Amino acid sequence: MAQTASVESTGPLAAGNWATTLALGTRAKSADTNLNSYLLETTLHFRDRNYAFSAAGAGRQDDFSRRLRCSYLRIRASVSAGARSYSTTRLATGAGARM
Image 1 (cartoon, rainbow, N blue to C red):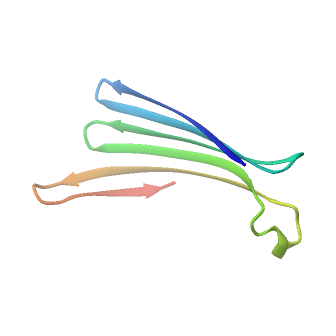
Image 2 (image 1 turned 135 degrees about the vertical axis):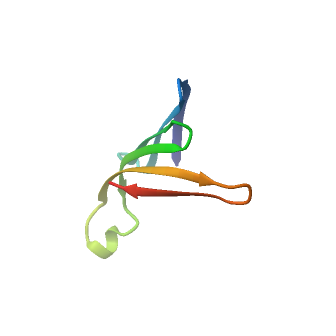
């Protein structure tokens, strides 16, 4: 059985807005084994066309465990990036970089 929960917060800033999400999940594999995971991500929109965003997460995965001869894999990842949007009357695009 799998269960998930998430909460999101958004709010205006003087020259933009900020949104943050926290998501949690668990999957029961047996009576005493759960595979838990989480994700935290946030996006800051500022000065009309600029964005900064970051995400971090971790979890346990067992789908590949038989091939690797282990009970589960622990996965952790994070990313931060920024972007600037450009638009005309017919096209909206952006340029960004990941850190």
